[in-house]
Image (cartoon, rainbow, N blue to C red; front, side, top):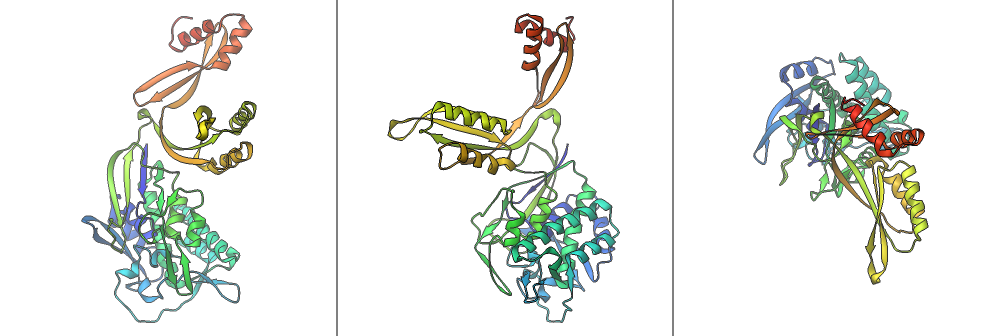
Length: 436
């Protein structure tokens, strides 16, 4: 399976993500030619060789009338509310105090720009007018919907009232459509991203100080595993967060891949660590097994009856946990206790944590995210003298095994008044093509 893995150890921003994908393309010049023929007013996209901590990659520069736009605007010009309850400003934090931001490497300019405004609807209309494949336009609109809803939530105004400065809006559009155009050209079968570093501290904008991650970024990243890291500053931008959320299927550590290419999308600022997004292009074969991520929830119980613990286990199983199990433990003051463990998918972590808190006496639930390497599973029905029996087939990692399904075997054995093992062995022989 063709897999794109995005490593966001230094955060994520629109131009860095796009530059990382750009390095994976077979025909990079064709990508630049397409971007520069879109007809975005005054916009030109250039690829610039760049090195960070001795690692070489690409920095994509979006020029407006021949210069990088952030040099011509106020630093950190975030979206902000005005007295007329409309939202004006620049949502594209890729030009704030973060890390790649165009203004950090661009020369100073002191000319005038016309600060017209785009609404969310006009941004979508602009995207729809671009000569790009429909899936690229659709994905770009989805990313802008995430950004618009996040800004709407952050400022308490309807998305229809979100206004973006023209300066900054166009180069943000270039980053968004550039990312999805590169993704379209690569055509991966799945996109996976790492947990996202967001940074910490605060950033000063034209209208005050914002916490890191910025409110819009934090809103978009809900449900995505992320962490602060040790570097102070804004590491992930709303645009970067929206691109990741609208493209990645999973957020986890790197799965098992046969890596074929690596792209480095460089930021503008220098840090002790190489300031880049890495894009890994590789092949993950179904025959080699599958990899996913699960959440492991656990708590210690020493003041519940066995019946109450059993009820909680049954309830968690009925609610769809991947597995629920208990183990005896010895707790403080030499009290015997029970370790309750629940396995679930990452997106159901909060729901199962609430169920544990509600139906047990624990005051806290521990959570660990685990990478799971597993066998793929399919069912195959076989005909036996006792009826149709489903056989579970598990394959991957050079392993293949089969097992008749318990419920089917038990029902057939009861119906035929024969021992369970007689039906079980008959199903195995039928699956192997042996005479039954």
